[in-house]
Length: 120
Image (cartoon, rainbow, N blue to C red; front, side):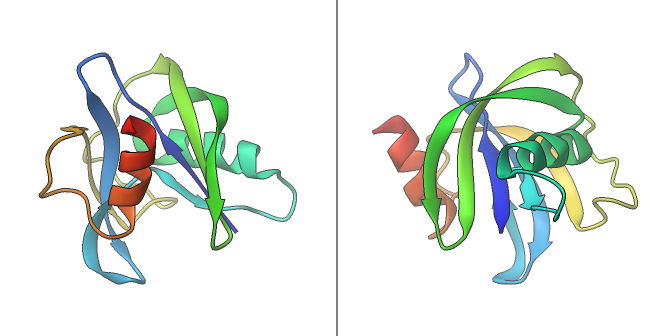
């Protein structure tokens, strides 16, 4: 199972990570990752966002659950962007940044439907 977060700021931007993934070479994705045996999907989402971005977040609600992937709407509680600082827990992350919701060059067939559901 996977748990990921969609985090939108007041400037109509969403927090994204550019990473290596199984479905392709390098893509932009929402921060998140695998759910460990000892945690709930919500706990995994919070942990993964912290590891990948540097932000502590609070889950607002579940936006969708499809193909064993939970997508949560979340908001930042505290923290600072850990941009371009991959560590041993997130070595697949190449970049972390806020991207405009209307930037069609960032969203693909996996991330676009979630963005559209959020903005719809």
